[in-house]
Image 1 (spheres, rainbow, N blue to C red):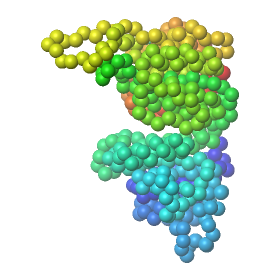
Image 2 (image 1 turned 135 degrees about the vertical axis):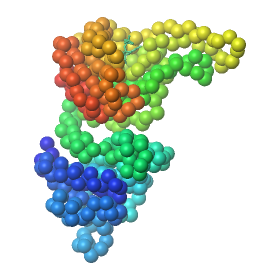
Image 3 (image 1 turned 90 degrees about the horizontal axis):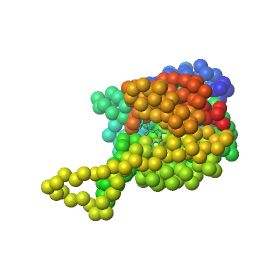
Image 4 (image 1 turned 135 degrees about the horizontal axis):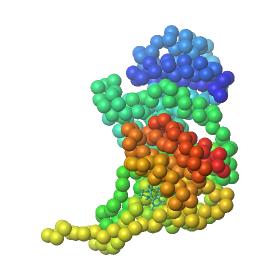
Length: 399
Ligand code: CTP
């Protein structure tokens, strides 16, 4: 699907630049045309000769100068390309793009580019976690720029943590998916997604909650929107940015609030994908004042929360598709199948806590999809974005 596609690879000055050589190779092998734009500093890490040999094109690294034939190359180049991939993206180039700064060949080309941009950040974990970098990345996400999240692990500076550029194969896959993604496949379909945890108040300052971050549900909502669906996203308390696209987001805190929002929305929907980690229990009588330390240890009585997925399963009409998630630790397939039948689902996404690197908080997940005809498909450990693609593919088939 990348045959004949025109891709700009932007390289900024980071040690991960050596991986961009592999990325160029992957695109060339897939039949794409590649032009490379670099910052001056990128050329400390990779040489002009390597980049030009692999891309089979002159690189663009200076806005002015004798090598440049005085055409406005950042305009002709950006008109030419179908997509722009910045890998590695340093804190500096991310900051420039988010703030409209154009002071070298790469930043100027980015500002002149009006099609899809992918950013693969690479930097030290302290820099990646810096509030300015995080703010810039969330702004870019809002602007529909695809961020290929860095992986965690050993960093060139000796630190361990998040900041290592994602592998070229994964970046390549994300771009390929973008071109393959059927943009109007779900046009006109209304789809409900629940995501994140719920918080159940104990008193005005304390709650019962869980470790869910909402990443899986948000990735699904983003993937649905990118295929033209009208998404209603009911989100529990999460701290991640809303995915791009046409998304009606409803923020809730407790399971009761999520239940009412979902019950109101579902009758108008073609499908529902319930990823939220809903608290099964809530304190029976939350205290109206903060509970003080006393000699007696307080006891909190818990009562059951409504089962949102089960309730939607009961009200489901002909033609509506309902999808649930299951997190199991033992007898996984059998337990997931019971949930599928018991809650009247069309398919269920089974996460296993036994799979290393999968589950709460992280960026990856390993799932098995089980449908109501007992077809079972197991998938590799993948990024949550990739898992979202698999889940939405299955939903599209069923719709
Ligand atoms: N779910 C829900 N409302 C609840 C509890 C769960 O909508 N009160 C949904 C979740 O969003 C998920 C699915 O149900 O899609 C499975 O959640 P899980 O907690 O694994 O299932 P439970 O039915 O709560 O069963 P158990 O905890 O006994 O495994």
